[in-house]
Length: 395
Image 1 (cartoon, rainbow, N blue to C red):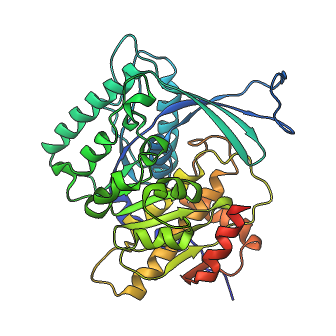
Image 2: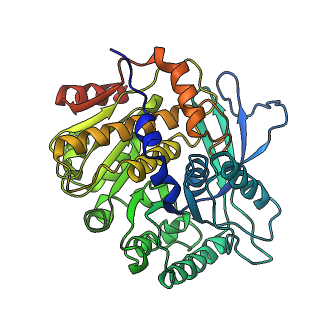
Image 3: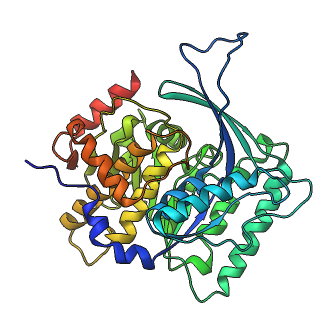
């Protein structure tokens, strides 16, 4: 059976992408990434070639990948104007804009303040694993809260509203005690999700640790009332649901908890995903690619999210006019396209570096087809398959 291209639905609906607009809110950081051969050992010195500083952070990763696919984006991010390193992030947005011919809003992109510095991340990579050391100032986190409030107020008076809001890792939404007394405990995320100016937009949420570690009970009502799609990886899903009253925190139980709350996407290692549409009894899946070489997994989840958002804009899977089978098929196609975007991201270093156009994704997919069984899409995942995924990740 020939393998159907995961890019086909998006290519067929390209005109919809060209007219769409996404609001990307979340993290932005300058990343310095190092690869270490062998096992990391404390009290040992490592030598490395000079490494470039690259753009990263959830909202920048989302924005750059969407721009490269031809979608217009408006980022709301914690970028310090006084910090020369913010140019690294602006340059990444410019390059992605040129790749896909989308455009991004430059006005009020940067936060003013002589004492402010842009968040900085040091990443240590060992094979497909990585550790990240994040540096960001409490002062910038407070200024970001003010910046967000101004931008939401501006949108309220704007005639052109976004079609989709992407919410990534908002560091300032951690518990106050976690960051020198600065922390909004989820209030900023909630402010975005409940903003009247964004009420007509679909909402795609891809939490970071500051948000999902607040627990499922903190977000239960928000997910049910204000979120269209919620994404996290399988380890994050277990941590998120630690207070949800689940007996074993199995994948089947977690999907059951989400069933009547919102559509959920749970990403798996090697860039596959299991997803469940709100109200549906069975999950769908895009099984992982079997890539032979992984350069860097940084930002792979954000790349997957950007791919699924692109599918939502090009070929929506949440239209109530469609029957359930059609919606499930479109949802599986969205997961397959997101998986392709994530796999491509892992062949490059950095979360927002060398973002591909649609044409580049088609070429990559063609070269990787030998690593896929049929199209890798399953429209009804069995409990036994969910059990096997649990066992694989338990080990």
